[in-house]
Length: 199
DNA sequence: CTAACGATTCGCT
DNA sequence: GCGAATCGTTAGT
Image (tube, chains in turn brown, blue, red):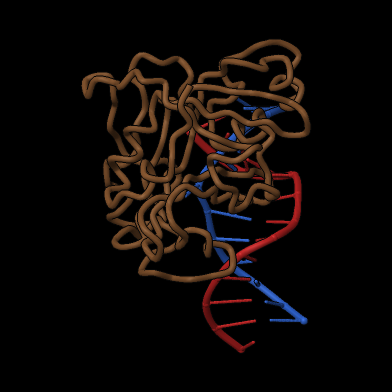
């Protein structure tokens, strides 16, 4: 199966990248454990014109510096002091765009994912939520800046492009502080999927 | 140095 | 539906 190369991520339209990431497979090989799942839900964040983005108006901090790198790197940060959120940096160097991965449909390594999540039995919330999927996949701050064609995290093309009619387009979650930009329809998920954080 | 605040989740009502 | 948990980052003193 083909691993997505740099070119996929180094594009100007982060919304397009977000939509095309739906249906792709994210894989991790961390601490000797292999896990994978199909991306079912994403959100776009743009450094140029989006108040919800950590790099709004090209703001540069130590935390968000990786967003300014060339597309194809991992932007991981701690949210609410509890959860690690995983983003995929896109666009050319200097343009701080990113795609937040909010949910996946688990494929391989179910037992390991459940163990990491401390779940006794299988449930739909195994990795449906941005803080949940990082836990299930074993992603944490160690992976800040990781290249997405590396040995620990990579994304595979499933060669099954989704029809536009199978993608639900709606507003992002938890960005009320962004004022009018909270209304942007920049959250996308696979209509038919049960593995989505919120319908 | 200090204080406010989350791109969330879970448990309880 | 509501509030607590929990801590690194950020901006301001």
